[in-house]
Image (cartoon, rainbow, N blue to C red; front, side, top):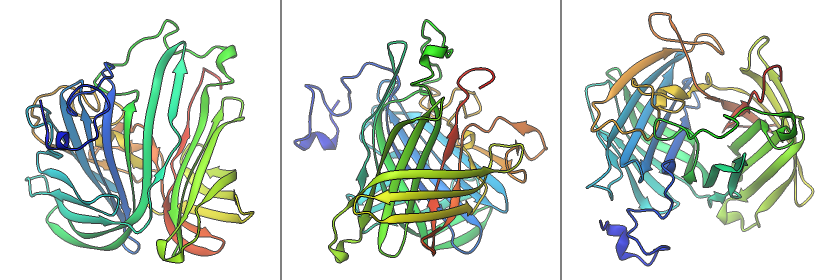
Length: 372
C-alpha cells in the first residue's frame, strides 16, 4: 500500500513506507506535545501514535486545570488510510518541518476541542539511540528528537473557550521498539525479575529535562543504575539562530531531588549542569502543575479495555474521563476511587542562573526488585 510520502526518496528497505522491516509488534512512531499556561495554572498534552504492525493509529488530548485532569482518548484502524495523521477529531499537520506544526481537535461532544499551532525557532535535538536489552531480548530501541517552542490558538474545556497565547511548549517525535505497545508484552525466561548480577545495568532513575530561556533551549537526560551509578548522560544547549553561536554539549549533570514526604511526587529539584565551554548552569525547579497521570492518555494500560497504546480496538468511539489530582501522588476518579495512574511527568517553573522560565522535568524511579 502506497502513501503520498512514497513519492520522496526516503526509502530504506524494499517496501512502501506504510510498512516496516521490523516484525516486532511493538514498533511505533509517535508525536507528543506538552504546553504550560504561564499565568492560569493550566496545561495540556496532545499525542498521536502509529503502530504499523498492529494496524492501529491512536491519539489523545488531556487538559489540566484546577488540579483536575480531563482526558480524551482516540483510536482507529490504520489501513487503508495509512498516510493520514488523523484519528477521529484529532489531526496533526506539519506546516513547515521542524518549525510549525498544527494540532486540530474538532468539536466531538466530549467538551474537549482546540486549534493550536506549535512554533519554534530552535533546531531539534536528536538524542542518542536508546537501546536496552534484558536476558538477550531487546526491550527498547528508539530514536527520538526534542524541540522547545511555543503554542498559540485556543482550547475548549467543558464549554469554556480559552485563548492560548504564546504558551511555553515542548514536543518530541520518537519511533522504534518500546515496551507497553499492543496490549501485551513478550515474556522472557526470567519473567523480568532482577537478579543481583543484573543490578549493574538495570535502570533505577531516569531524568529527562527540557527548558528554555530568552536565548537558548536545553534538552538533557541522565540514567542511573540500581546502585546509583551513571549509565548514560547526554544533552545539548541550542542558542537561537540569530545569536549565531555554536551548540554546546552537556558534560556534567548533578541533581538534588526532594520529594513530598512519603511519596514519589517531586517537591523541588536542583540541577547543576556543566557545559562543554565550561559554563555551569544552576537550575532550580518546582512544580507548575500536578504531575501528569499518563494512564489518562493511554500509556500504562490505559483505555477502558486496559490494553494500553497500540492495541487493536477497531474504530473506537472517543473515550472521555476525568481525574482528581488534589493529592500530590494519589489519583482518583470523580467518585473518589483511586486510579492506577501510570508513570508521572512533571511540568515545572524553573530558574536558570536566576532567570525564570518553564520546563518539563520527568523524574522516573523504578523498582528493580523487592526491597530495593
